Length: 157
Image (cartoon, rainbow, N blue to C red):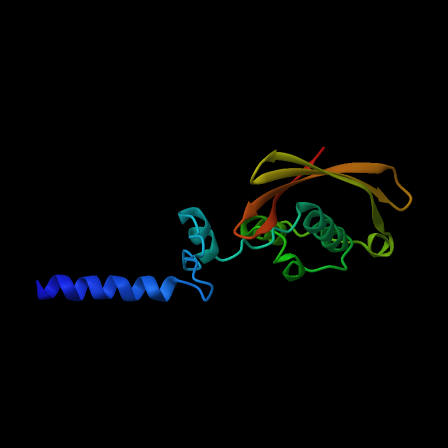
């Protein structure tokens, strides 16, 4: 019986605490923050995805260095961040002998068009004009490796 009285007294005290100064009872609600969904919590913990560089600037930069290499003014180490290891080895094995007149001539990129072949591979079609000669086409094959694009092959169009 004493336990019932204590319980009843506790209920009365909480009822008094909930009544306002004008005597009307108000329902107290705790400020509740909405719970984030599991998907939101999971997404918040993941690091942001790295920005993927477009393959077009990589193709253009590689092509500029490659054309300089063909004219005896470039180097293979300058292409290291832009080309796959296999392609760099191939370029090193097949270094062209450049004549003084070839060193003096220049090439420029007329067009560069990048076509997506798959989510991880593109084909870059280029038109190159050598001073004093007709334009010619080159194909660059690029693959997405890690967080960057690299040129894996060079071919004639």
